[in-house]
Amino acid sequence: MGKKKKIKMMMMMMMMMMMMIIIIIIIIIISTHLEKQNLLAVEQRGCRPGNKWFKDKLMISKAIYEDCKRRNKNLSTVWIDYQKAFNSVPHSWVVKSTEMVRVNSKIVKFCK
Image 1 (cartoon, rainbow, N blue to C red):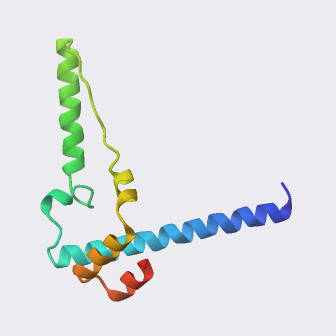
Image 2: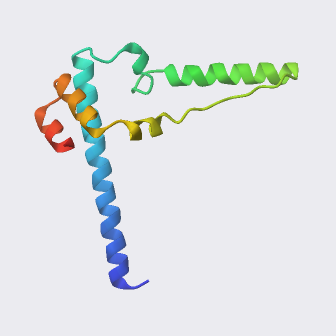
């Protein structure tokens, strides 16, 4: 690989990392705002730091699996990819919802 191509690849990697950092910062700011304003329902806090909801669900799933295995029963599991659901939400709705819960206007403008 040529030197120019390596530099281009490094620049692309740096840009991707910078975007990830920006996204993480925005997520932290919005999450903190939602927590402070008590706008996030308990049911929606599953993957928040310090929350054991996800671990609890995995432990329950494991217990069910082991019970079925011990009893020699069939078990079917379905996983839903919620991440793909966000691809179908219009960007304008995301912006409007952040405005409705009064997320910092600088963050809203950046997301626009």
